[in-house]
Length: 433
Image (cartoon, rainbow, N blue to C red; front, side):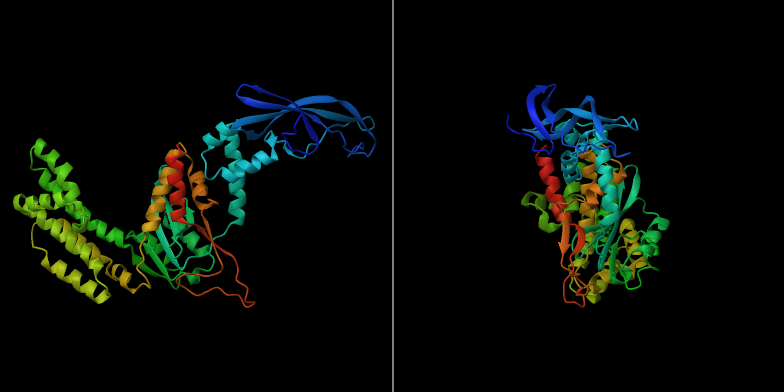
């Protein structure tokens, strides 16, 4: 019959389907040395033992190899030796090429899908992935970012810390916890820490406290979207206050109609929504005034220079009435507490935001959902070592100095998985389900 296996040392002699598997029966081509590896005396045939191993799927069906494996015995030392088949992995009970195929896909496909495709147990697939992850942990190192993004994400019951390279929009590192001790240990041991020029994060003080003493050249910039988000939250607080004074029927209308209108920017409103906003101005003028304060705060980030932005903020703060806009007064106080770090946004070489870090957080949550409750370690590995998305450059650090070695040969540098590519892969996975 045709050699369907293309494996050294065995010849297929029969094929059948059984229990959802393609079963291929193969004979061993006996050519192994006839000397005992223990005492170098001659070996003698000692019967055969039938074994069944998993192999790579054929025509989208799992495959099992059925082999009568010769056994050899040494009369001199009494040792019994099983005939060696180098293409088999004895521990996993499958071919090495099947393990290689799983290793290539286990960080981009769910374990359940691979188990169904290969006929292996989910735990076997998971163990193969764990071995791969251990190797990657020891060998893969990503270039230290010039512009570092820091954020948090809630996964597997805990807040984790996500670090990104905002120069290349790629993943840099994912830490198990966001606590100061964990963060300080990481920054203390981080290679090339002097190359970090900017750190973009939110207003959570432990982030700044954790890297301040270890990144000597880094300046903090508070993420724009975390700042303007507070203006939307202030408006939402006022909408809810007004909503609490209405009847149940009126509250349903407010929640379904007015909420989404007031959260939008004017440029995003449809013609009908603009007309609805005019109705709000007539019937709920206090809420319309809050909407205008939200929009005025957003426009601070539309100005081109730091001096103008600071002037816009001062004018906005001074225009707040003494009563009735308490949520926006709280926003103004928060800005003043983080004044320097917020307005350093205009000092950056280009407008730095943590938008890609936020997008990465969402992708990890999707991975968690699709994986039916992966552990933190597995979600981290699937994100951090995704082969299809890993971004490779030639020694150039965007936003900093070029890494050109003295021998004038550019080194290949890995920047970590490209977040937009991860997003595309995630969309492809969702569409195929």
